[in-house]
Length: 194
Image 1 (cartoon, helix red, strand yellow):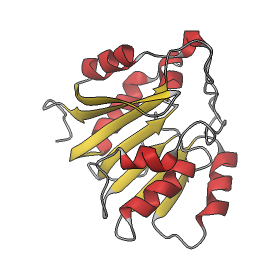
Image 2 (cartoon, helix red, strand yellow):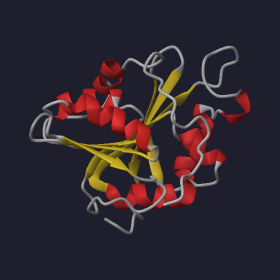
Image 3 (cartoon, helix red, strand yellow):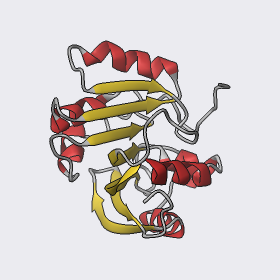
């Protein structure tokens, strides 16, 4: 697979996001499957692994092998995390309709910039369970705050419009810390994988 260059890819936002608080904002329970798309060094995946417990599963995906190597070194004895080097805009080695939370933090703006929304949304719809949720966490479009250049950021309204254009129903929009927002959406009824 040719290595794709993503905007700001390979950078960790560990110092900008409180992973524990983020996971607490989600309807994540023991036994769930959580997919961390663009997991980076896995700091959110590790927190999610605690939330889903031994009966649950975390699929941590990143296109950068170096990031996945770092995560593998941090997994320790946890057996409920599956680290994958893969491109989230292509078919992942994950069965249809098995993901309860498809989560992406600081990834969506890069997908939009790269013109990869269509293949990403098709794969998200394939993977989400009937009651699954898509969660997008991204940088607020506020001058003078850490994150990508303002031209690359998406406002909450821009993300909502994209999600709705792809058949998702936005259920909540919230504050995810000083620099981020969180948008949670459910699939519409026209999902061909339902």
